[in-house]
Length: 326
Ligand code: ES4
Ligand code: ZN
Image 1 (cartoon, protein in one colour):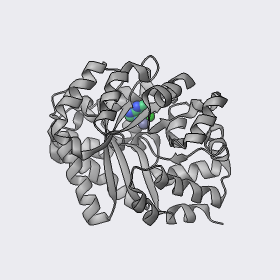
Image 2 (cartoon, protein in one colour; image 1 turned 30 degrees about the vertical axis):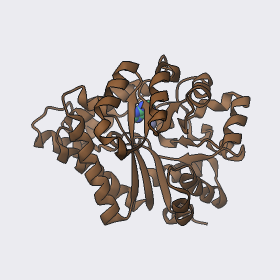
Image 3 (cartoon, helix red, strand yellow; image 1 turned 60 degrees about the vertical axis):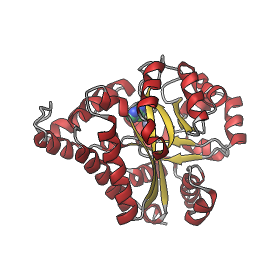
Image 4 (tube, protein in one colour; image 1 turned 45 degrees about the vertical axis):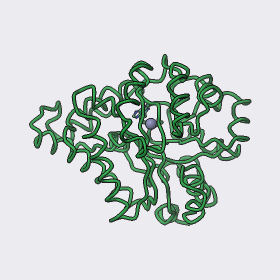
C-alpha cells in the first residue's frame, strides 16, 4: 500500500511542538526587515547551512538567536498562524503547543505580547481551520527554579489559558528534581506536567520526571529504553512518550533513523506518539516525520494507525472528545 497516502489521510494530534521552532527562515528574514533587526543570514541558503547540529546545545544557540526577531503581538500571531496552516495540510486536528516565555521576557518582550499573539492565532485556527488546541507554558531548565516561580507568578492572569506546563532547553546538568517545588506548585494549580527527559539526559532523569515529579507526559524519553524496569513502569502507567524522529536525527540523539526506539516502544506496549518538535530547524512537519520513520523502521499500516490513535489517547482532550476524534 501507499504509506504516504495513509499518513496524509489519518487524523492526527500534535503533542510536541515548540512554536518558536516552527519559525521558517523565510519568515525570519521577513520579520527582520519589518522590525528593522539585523540577522546573521543574508540568504535562505546561508540560514539552512547553519542548521547542521552536533547536539542539542548547538541547536538551542541558534533557536534562541532566531527568535530574537519576534517582537510584536502580530509577529507571534503570524508565526502561530503559519504553523497552523502547515498542520492543516498534514491533517492535524488537535495541537498541544509549547512556548518559551522566558526566552522572550528576558530580552524585553512582554509576557502578554507573546501570549496574546499566540492565543489569538489558536482561536483563529479553531474558527477557520477547525483545529482544536491547547497551550503549554514551558520553563527553561537552564534557568533557576526561582526564575520559574517568577514566570508562574507573572503568568497568573492567563493561568486559565494553559492546559499544562513544560520543561525544556539544555537537559544534561539540569535534572527534573532541580524544579521539584515548582512542579509541585503547578500540580496544585491543576496544570498537566510535561517534562522533556531522556533526550540527551540519562534514564535517571526519566525516572525523576515520572516518579518524583509525577509527569503526565514524557517528552522524547528515548533513553528510558536503557532501563528495563522503567520500561515496565511506562507500560503499566501508559504514560505518553512524545517521540520526535527528525529531531532525534538532526540533534544526533540517534545516528540513523533506523536506530529510533519508536518501533521497540510500540512493540513493548508503550503509549508513544510521533511529533515534529522544531520543524523549521529539523527538516519537516508532522507528516514528514511519520513518513520518514515509517520508511526507516518499515512500520506497518496497523502501526501507523496505532500511532495516530495514540496521539489522541495521549492528548489532554476530555475523553468524549477523544472518542469523537479517534
Ligand atoms: C527543544 Cl529539541 C528540544 N529539546 C529541548 N528543549 C527544546 N526547546 C526547543 N526545542
Ligand atoms: Zn522539544
